[in-house]
Image 1 (cartoon, rainbow, N blue to C red):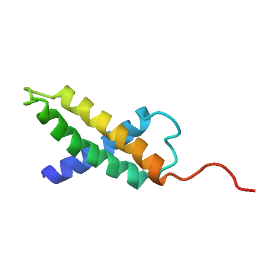
Image 2 (image 1 turned 90 degrees about the vertical axis):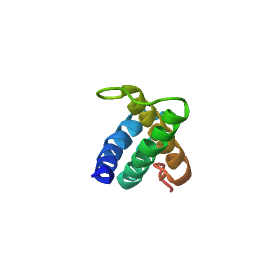
Image 3 (image 1 turned 45 degrees about the vertical axis):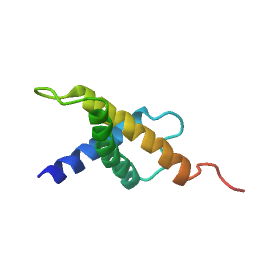
Image 4 (image 1 turned 180 degrees about the vertical axis):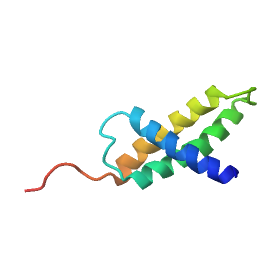
Length: 90
């Protein structure tokens, strides 16, 4: 059940990361955005715990904000590395 939760959270976090990523962020495919979101959730959790985050009762908003920021960074990296150019070649 935890794997399904990470996938669902990764989809949502990936789209949020794509939303807040600066620049031209629509030039990567949606499947890569979802992978960035899943990576953001996993990396965000490690970053959160590395800086002393131990969770809180209820929804841990700081952990989710860190995951969104990590996903946004991954979206920017993916866009830079594998993004499709929107410029027309004549």
